[in-house]
Structures are given as C-alpha cells and as structure tokens.
Length: 299
Image 1 (cartoon, rainbow, N blue to C red):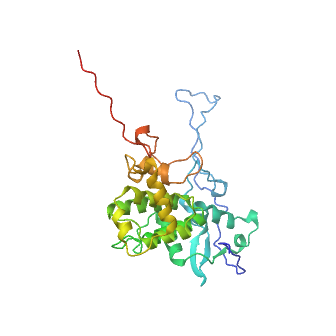
Image 2: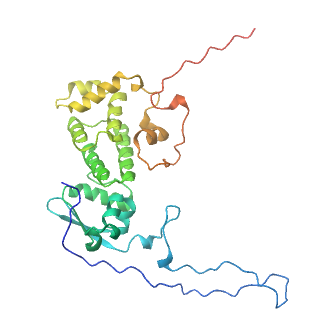
Image 3: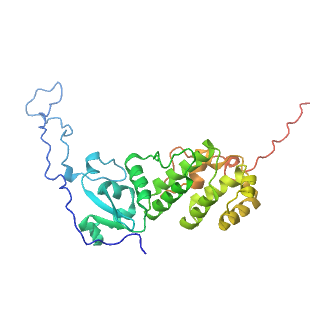
C-alpha cells in the first residue's frame, strides 16, 4: 500500500500576500560632491526600495523570509484512523521532497488542489515527533527522552523520515542515538534490533551505526546473556563486522564529527556537514594504529 493516498475533500487555504508594494519613497538622488554644475550628470545610487513580495524568489543560495514559510495551512491525515495534523504547507515542502511533489500543482495530484493529504500507513505518534522537529529542529520530546533511551521510537521516526525523504531529520536521529549510547552507556535492546531490521532499509546508515555500537562498545556479555532473542539478521551483520579488520578503529566513528558525517549521514551530492573536512588517513574509519619508526641514535 503506498504511503500517500488521495482524498476527495477540499479545504480553503489562506490567501497569500499579493499586490503588496513598498510604500517607502525614494530619497532625492545626490549630486557628486564639489560639483555645482546643474547640467552635470547626477551620481546614481542603488535604490532603497524593496521589491514586491510577489517578485521575490527563494533559491538555494538565498534565505527565504519567514513570512514566505507560514502562509498556507494544509491537513495531513495520519494512520488508519486519519488523525489530523494542520501544518504549514511551505514548511513541509521546504523540508521534504515527498510533500513538495504531493502539493505541486504541475503534477496534477489531487492533494495539490485540495490541500489534504492522507498517510494511512504512518503512525500518528511518529508524525507528531516529525512535526515537532519540523518547527523546532529538536528531538527533546518527553516520549523520546525518558530515564531509559527509547531507541525503538527513534528508529521508527527514522523510518518515517526515510519514507518522506527528509535527510536532515535522519541525520539528526543518527546524532541523537549516538549521543544517547555514550551518555547513558547503553545500546539498543533485542526488541529494538527487530524494529531496526523490520522497518529500516538494508542500506541505510542507521543499521551500520547500531552494528558499530555493538562491535566497538563492550557488549559481549550483554549479547550472550540477554533473556530476549536478538534479530538474526542483526547478529549476522555483527559477526561479519567483527570478522573484518576494521572492527576496532582507533576512533569510534560516532565520537568524531567528521567521521560521524562520513559514516552515518546522508547528504545531497556535493554537500557535507559543516566542519567535516577530510581527516588524515590515520583517523579514518577502520584505521589501525601504526608503530612509530624508531629514532636513530646520534653518533
């Protein structure tokens, strides 16, 4: 069943700002200093008038003014019970190619004219976390930060972000899980690994992060003695990881910002995390420490 389904109902959206003209009057053009000749060509200065809003366009190289992100309200019905969320369409489309396509009138989707979109296979709680991140860029929800890390909720949110093609949220979840693992000295539970392998695609970086957490942290007794059963596919990937030479890198990848970006983040071609310049070979993932050459004794 596709994630998106059509809706036959319609809603009225707010009218965008149109025909807005700047009322600021231009000041007289000053003449060149020291030249009193009335016939001389006046010195031209740039106009201080702001272009009308309708003439402005937001490109990747410019920042859209806030007023352009909060103009139209759309309804997203989530889950089999159609739990409704009212969200600004511009904010959704700016963060997700999925929503940008769904509400694009050029593609003739019904959602583009009705401003109502159905996500019957998504979970309302996961979508609530997504909306919080959408407006605040944080994951400090009370359900995501209990006394014990709720890894499975973050994993399910990652699955939703993957379905909606929201790379920034996926990277944020990776950072959050890595920080929780170190701050609480914990790793996902057997149930978490089943959620990970049932709902997350095989090639996603999150799977790699979880396997690396178990391979690098001291988890041998935990895996051996835990009363619950681990996902078999997870155990297979863990064994393969441990059999390879790079199982114990010099630096845990998630503890270095550059390695974290390289190993577990997703970016558009040509983009990367800020400050993630390429490190030297000795600090790359999988690198092993090399003995320093002995110094020659001076004669």
